[in-house]
Image (cartoon, rainbow, N blue to C red; front, side, top):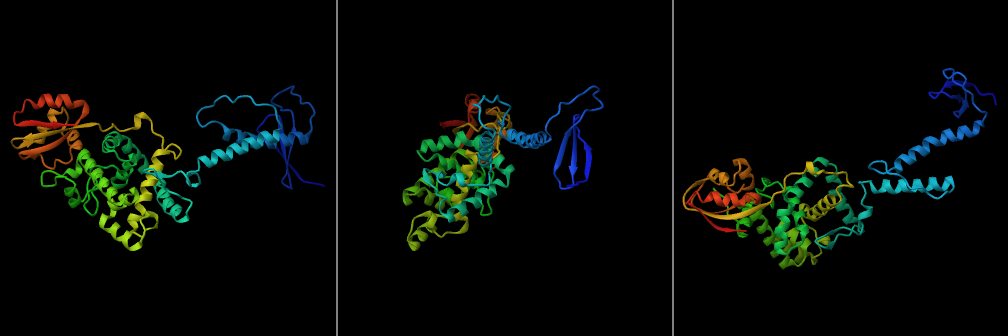
Length: 382
């Protein structure tokens, strides 16, 4: 076979690569003129060709198999055939790749739970409904970072209230779905606060709502009222999925659906689209937050927001009082104090009773400074 050969000097000093017309590379060892006196022992061209072709492949496999953080020393292995070692490395690469593939739910088929109730993805309809929410959330990583940081910010306060009420810890994810844990959130239907109460439901659950006060924005009081509402819904329906769906759509609509469709299985009920998506969105949020590092959400201590840890103090004001008086007693700037007491809607509070949230580490200072104002009386604290 007479093949035309184009010689190309390699970037390496002792190699010269010939490119043959049929596309197969041919490598020869040569002496570099820049290295006077360099000599090369005769060796088989085919052996060098095989070695040089295999080296990049082996190097790539080994790089993929290295630990994600740092270069840990790899313990020595027992001698074995090259083929078996390559096979083992390739198998490990496949395992690692599958583990880091975020756009799959195969590993979740039998592991999803909410309020200790299983969410099976073995049914195609359930898988499709879950993946719709899960993958859409994953498309907005910035939002997920904010949600996760707010979750850690409010976790202690909300979880403590849930624990006091003896209810499932997973209910915190319902609050995330409602407001993304934005205490100022207001919906198009004028639902407000962390738990998105509409006025009628809020008043029914003991929240004060008037010109000067809107307890839907009180992070502690609204949390207690939301949990009381959910507890009543669970007592009626006996199922947390139905109770949460009723929180979204209203108990009357769930009663009607159950009666007419002759089933109380949430996954079998035909409901308004928002309510059908509701449980799956909550499950998706839980999965993302609990498995956040695998999904690429890695937060260091310095990245986190300061946790909200407050004590609630009930005050009776015997005369109109400026909110800044209370802020100064808490040794806080007005804005800092207001962010914990968004339910106080005006600068001046008329005579009456109010629940005030004070940073836990400022409680003693607050109580001591209040003594300078004889028209303010402490009537309770948690």
